[in-house]
Picture 1 (cartoon, helix red, strand yellow):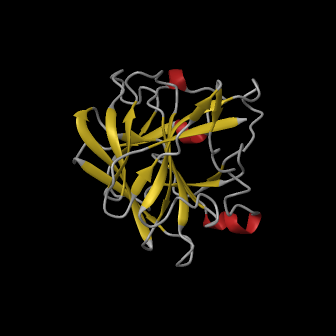
Picture 2: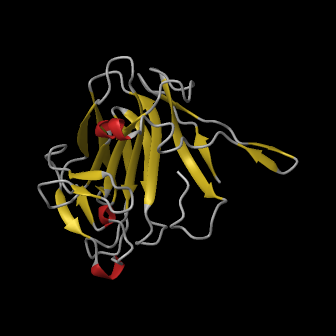
Picture 3: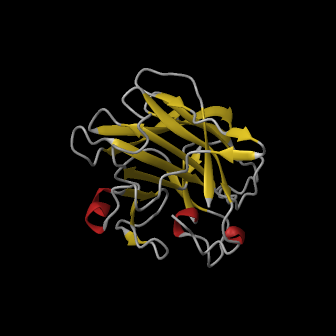
Length: 238
């Protein structure tokens, strides 16, 4: 079983990211769980066409199918015109490493660089799970993992801090928000503590009935997740 902790951040014009507090009573923690990646998403076979899955930094020109999820991942050139592609250091590549972590797109130039993602749902059905993935993997040969800010539109999503983690350990950011327009931008902002980069970016449509706290003026951000399930990490419950 996985439990997720969601944190509060400051309000911005159209998106206030709230928290679901964890309540501890007699040593028992209660929390609303992260949405099932298949069941609560609009994730039946016919709806997967609405998924956006991007391998950031992938040098190819066509999509590929991920072996573990059977989902197609697209190169990111159609979503941003900034940055440059890099492969992670070979010392961090193993046969088990998912393909999205084998390359990155980094943004040396400019303080703010964005991906523009289209809304894949009709008007009125615009609640999404955003997921961004980062694995440094010493792609630049500097052995200096960066710290930078991640935004959804003009709203701060997360400060991505890779400086204290294993270079081969992925960092995941997730948020559930309502997209009021027919597109949304996910932006990486240089805060002067290293070059921003990204490994993968995903957008998943959600049923409007789940997470009623999420609306046009407020959303939810994942703060942490704990795995209380199997020791075999290939046996994943989604």
